[in-house]
Length: 513
Image (cartoon, rainbow, N blue to C red):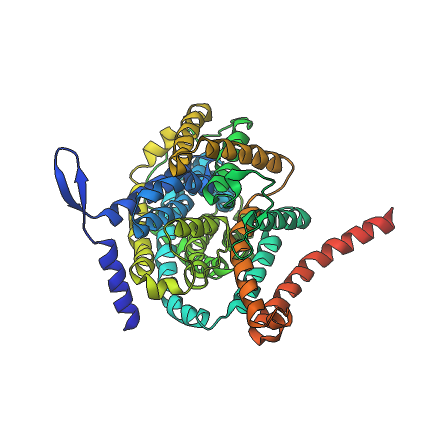
């Protein structure tokens, strides 16, 4: 019964009317949270459809706007952008064979083949239906696990939190794309940047080099906007636009009965796989579509159909995609640990609003906590309506060249950054981080671990210092606590399991030479 009461509180929060002052009309009662949820879902779909923008860059660009919004509405909008982008990414993957999101890579394999054979409508329809079902189930999973996980988290001390964050960073290294060494370098660079500024305990400047604008530390919005927002724009300007837009008619959007029967079990399996992997720290949600596709191909009676327009290759990965995107909120809302770069941005947005991420959010801000969860149900329904009837608009939008979009994005982003503190130096620093981020991308470094290291670095330092105070300066205080030691052992085992094959390959290469 508790969960029903909590969900009732969430729906009351989302449906609450707030008086908004409109010009020439005056104060008008409006469902602001519903409107912000719709804006988030619409913007998320838009940036999902436009390949090369992505939810990380978009959320960083919209962070300055959240200053003027109520905390609940701001986080509902940002969450809508994230899971809305998962919906939109499938449209681009199916129609243009360009994944709008990394998680839509698998959808493009069979989805675009279906489109080339005149079945684009069926592919889009089953992707939307599978995503809607998975999103609804994932929301139930979040609601069911929220209370027990929060109660468990309340038993954590500073040592346990420090060890949990270490484990989260290890997962980020293991699940990162490309080189493990480069991922670790990004983690450590993020941790280093988190220490910049005045030490609150000693009052000494750290790594400021006499540069006064960073004496209070590097502003999260400036770093995120530069490393992700501006750098992403620079990267996409150098990409040659080749869009294989399907010329055949889209056809009926509602799949046939036979197609629904073929897709029903893949949708269910994809939902389960995505929900489980989405909880993993270190961006486990990205693994969901790949794992689902591999599972469907392995258990299929006709695996040769995959890659040639198998509807199971669209249904399973798209369901896993959206389920993972939503269950990735579980570590953030219950433990205060962001599992990926988007959730790290959510931590930044919560901090901007004066909310401390962690299990106390449920007890101190229950309306925000349950309002965010229930808004996902409403958001999934909105996305179903936004995606299918408006498909013609999204197809036309895909024909707009990037060179016309990106100058507008940059101008509004600069205005947003300047509006935070009304300091021109903030814009200059953002441009500096943009050049640094662009250089890192060109050198093959993934910026997402850097942002995770930056966000978790401050929390890790705070918890480590508190743990050391409790143990009178001894590091044994972190290891002697059973749960803390267990988390560190798990982190070490996972890191060793990831590094050993790389070392073995390097050794074999040396002996071969």
